[in-house]
Image (cartoon, rainbow over all chains, first blue to last red):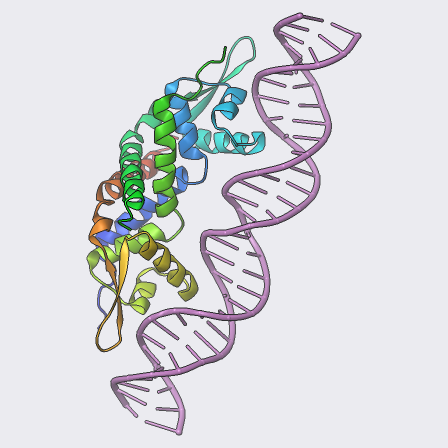
Length: 115
Length: 115
DNA sequence: GTTAGCACTAACCTGTGGGTTAGTAATCCA
DNA sequence: TGGATTACTAACCCACAGGTTAGTGCTAAC
């Protein structure tokens, strides 16, 4: 007889966490979402906000975020393009909040050599 | 004069989120933490639980998690090694919970072609 | 005495996330 | 008319996360 090394619950939970991480992870996704929280932005504006990102990478990341429904492209009458944070991105609020809180706490711990 | 493309708040928040993600991200970190939630496990036991991970990768991931204080190695008198989820890993509870909830909701959305 | 399990490490390989540099077509500004 | 800006794409490159296979020294079982 074999011991249950992974409970049913953990079998549900693991892929869900993975799915979420898959969409959020990477160097820029979260930054972009945060950047767009303070209002719609055009491409180059975003690039300036996210110091260090290249046009190529920004373009790719925006496409990913669009695919996942977090961000939309809005082309204005005069042709300028705005990147807009969708309402759906707000559903990440709690995730983000917890992530940020934990990140702050963790850095604090490291600063105090508690780790 | 330049417009403020990134608020002070967003400058605090971005790196914090990044820090947290850096520690959690990757294919296995979260899975390992979840796997260890149901009790201490030995190396090979973990490898069986996390179907698909190689010994090499598991070994590396465990070292990372140990470095960040989330997991400990406990060597018993008889020489067997147990990997133990630290109390500190519980501080990720909320993060995990939100991540999982969002992941479930997102998958639901995709299944319903809402994206 | 050999087979199986344990806890790994070594050597090697591959895919890809992400970076660099350059270029383009369109529009705006001086 | 010529430069600057916008919104990108193309071509190329590299580091590294993660996978594959093999092997180690130890112990316990058969």
